[in-house]
Image 1 (tube, one colour):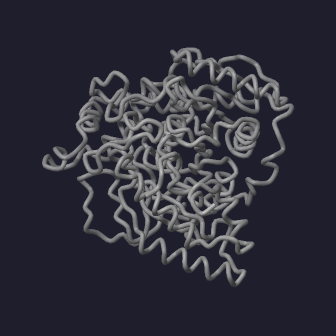
Image 2 (cartoon, one colour):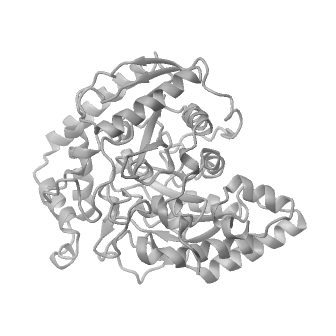
Length: 472
């Protein structure tokens, strides 16, 4: 049992704390030991604060002994992506252009909520520079690797969080998703990742990439993500885009099943090319959804590839963020990101507002489509994980990570809730993800469907090869 403390779910940890069978201190130490054991190979962490973590764990232990926990994640280890502010830690965003020597005196909203409920914050996870791409490497922190095969990428931009969760560093992590940055690494790393409806989880400061960016949970278990949603969806006045707080308990009715739910299954969204192994695994997962009682239609939503819309909006965000950097700082940027900034200079105001208009039309089309269906399912990604350190399977250096992520960014444009749940492995042992998209604001149904699938399968129980290595 002691050897597996770092693999326990948040739900099981809290139950054990309540019964005084486990201490948050021994759990924190187990997680810190796992990080020390494996992060030289994975490079998923860019900051680990052992002293602070153990101090937090000891305070949690005292609260549990008194029977006065602060909340539903008291004493549970958690990780934070290095794009989200954490008081006392430099949030460098994977960039050499960010000045380390400044006041780091505020928590971002999701971090503040986790801290208020007693989560034990262990450290920051790696990100590509400013979270700009679907893999995780940066000039500041180097290359992050996939626990299932260290020669492969864990995806991105929340690849540090996904690799860490998959490798058993902690049960909970925060990620951000502006074009798939939670779901891409969840799919490549074999974990669960949920992109909430836009505004459901408050975020501050607003992403430089605007209203396509979401903050959400990354976990090994769907139930843990539901627990996290209960915490991080609480209000924060700093986010003026945030939705009114509805007090929903995402763990309630999580086990209700999906019998009778109307599900649209789109194998390729009408335009994507999908690897045969991925397509077969997703098709088998959809068969299981049918067996669980869902009413599944094979149907495409009917929109053309919205990549051109997304590129204009995303590239414009890069220009707003970095276009005015002095020459000496631009020289420090990831060359691929610098090229995106260069490309963005060709975007005119007319191009931008045309893209905004086209995005609105796409959003309307999906709202109408989802009146017929409770959920839409697709592959999370059309391919398995590829070589770490590359921008894409064919790396031409032009910032075209959007080309191999056709299933994720459309639903950043529409702002719908969407999640990736493990649904299989390739013959080479690389994870495959099932992508579940819900109606706008209906995060509960996405979590419920993911939980039903998870409980009817065993993919989430598998551990990567490094987990089998002997300790010491």
